[in-house]
Figure 1 (tube, helix red, strand yellow):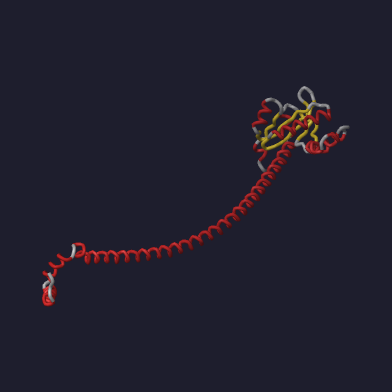
Figure 2 (cartoon, one colour; figure 1 turned 45 degrees about the horizontal axis):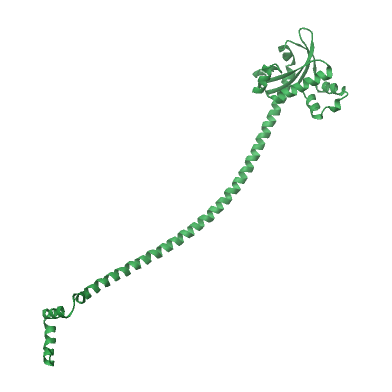
Length: 257
């Protein structure tokens, strides 16, 4: 069926003036998909607009994150530099502290050694001052107390004196106490004493060596003697075995006057 121009004009007017009729015509001409297209497009446009807004916010967030990361990196770089400087200063401090500790340790050791030498001299002098008491404690009487000059003279009389190492001769001359004594039976012998606050094996060895020298040089027996306030375990064991005799200082003897 073909419409003439007049009918076309009436149809167009009716479509313009009657929305219900227009909708009926649309439903006949357009499929459901085409009629829903404007609404769907509007929804799509809204979704795109929301996505764009979210993307813009994401970009802002990324930009802020990058800025914050750059600031963090700068702070971290500064921290690393400060830490490196601190480590260098700590290393220098540790080196200086080790040097200081070594100096203090060396100084304390020197003080300890000096005190040990001083205490040794005090013990030796006290042993010589107490020579009569020492002899009496062993049931003997003093015949003579030998000093360094006497001991040197004993060595000079020996044909083989030069064969004795100089260090041993010097140690013998510096013996803390050498006395010639007589026991109740009338027998004469020597006491070779080494004095110390706390006696150790070195004191015993010096006393034994000096006793051997005295016997060799004089022909008389000689007894090694430890003169001390206390002894280490090794010395106590030798005293208990009778290897060496012991005279114990009184604590009051060692108090400064």
